[in-house]
Length: 465
Image (tube, rainbow, N blue to C red; front, side):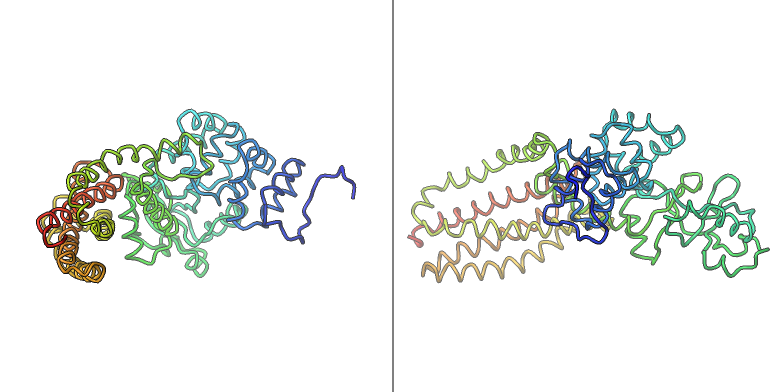
């Protein structure tokens, strides 16, 4: 083989999945877009994401700019949304706009919505005026409402059309519909308002002379473009719909929100809440993000947590004489702290879920507390008994068992009470419960647990020494 020939990958060859980023970069450097596309298409979506995460910005730009725009869009569609937006925002505006045009409307909205205003405006300036206006309108929706989740690629028909006219239109525009998953058409009046849904199955078996008004589903279920995620989740859990039309305040059809999009966003929302609870206040983090951005996001809560943990340390310092006299207490302090924290986090998770589903209101403190304290009493008693037995076996002192067992029982009740109520309090105050519930719970239960163990031990010191 001539060494000067560009590297290519025959379709029959197995792609290198050990270090796919090296092959991807070699093909991009050669400038052979077709060979690069062949290689990328043979990789799994996981390997595609892995390869891009190992390339630096310049190398990634080279890969994306070598690929044809539609192939680059396909590659980006398999990446996490935050990574796709990061890559699009770092490209030249013309290259980014070419790729954006090839993305489905819902993915356009996701990517453009994550860009800053200057990046967004630069890309929109490269798009045709009509497409730019539509893209900006989509990007204005929040990710967690129907408008931000919907797709705009759909079949739209006038209620004045006959079955024959609809079939003729479908036949004429068949190339435009090749990439669409078509099961329904949407029927609108002259003002664009949704009046019916047309099953493709019904269309095929109808008389050609019939009006589509005779075969469509009248008064279809629809959702407002402002409908929040929890409302969409409830709708799809209650019905076996694959998709639901989205309308604006005037009833004008805007798009369709699909079940898979709602499921995906629901998982993302849960992941976001988890990240916030772990101190990643800025949301999703990838190691391809700028170093200082990742550091700042983590430090934003860790620095606050230092202050909160000083309180727990102060409790131990107050009872240091007791701790020195009964050194066995040091063995059980972390056990009580951890077990109580776990119980409290369970209560936090239940309150967070019920708030998101609208099953409780932020003002229902007593109802939530009464439910939690009952569970805390049972679980705390059982856990306290088990730990008390362990302390008795460990030290041979029944009073040590009473101290640690009693402290764990009470602290578990405190933890579930706080865990159940903190999300309600924060929600009522307008603060995101996911951000502060976990750290606040942990700090308070640590302080309370240390105080109970060391306080009880101080009162019974003569029996423990």
